[in-house]
Image 1 (spheres, rainbow, N blue to C red):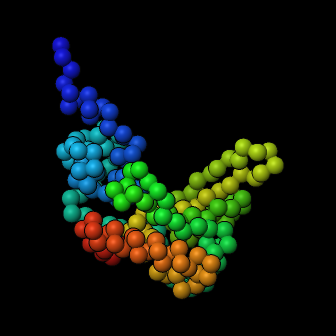
Image 2: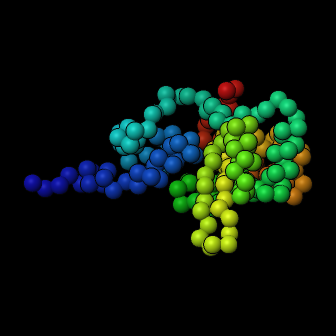
Image 3: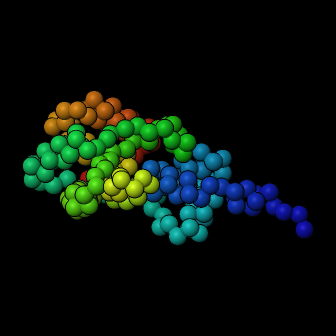
Length: 187
């Protein structure tokens, strides 16, 4: 029995990359399908099979970061980003723009990273160092374009060292959301 070429192509789609585009980059199934030259239904089926909960059509992006009311926390975050963090546009094969916006803070003290996560949301990761004399690192990060458009304007006035990087990433994020057709709504 001959193999169905569509079925074998569906099996070869990069599942990790598709999940990352849908979850981390907040691209729609239509945008992802266009990228991989297949139908949105194929992407939806693949995501369902991977256990990903699909968003409703025409949904508004919601914040996964929270902005605290206390100004001192925003000021403290700006100082931490200036000293221990990075705001970058990283080259990305998965992004149709060629770059993905990133904000992260790396520290060997888990308490700081846990505080950032508790106060602002975002993601926490752990990186074990291979050299014996180096300490392991905890990483707090924000990857979502939408979240960065919410967080960066709040910390931007208080940044000194990373101010230019933040302005560049914020401009990129706003342009990306505008081109994607997303409506910035209140979450």
